[in-house]
Length: 59
Image (cartoon, rainbow, N blue to C red; front, top):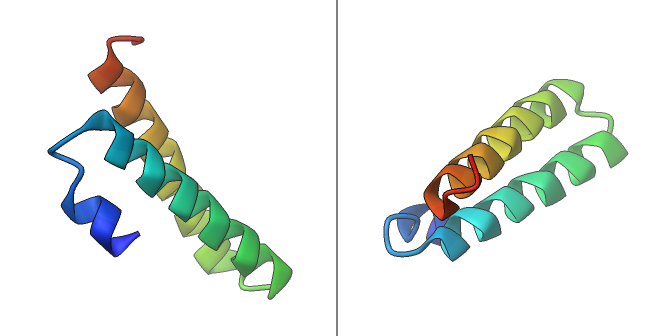
């Protein structure tokens, strides 16, 4: 996630990788019952998906 966050400006693909990483972290947080972390990661993932769609011209 850290590497993809740093490379987001280079390509929309890195934004998508960041979104997937956030979703994976949210899944892990749910499995470990860390609800606050899960909620924050879901928000980050949703924002990254929105940014990816905006950069691709879908929104």
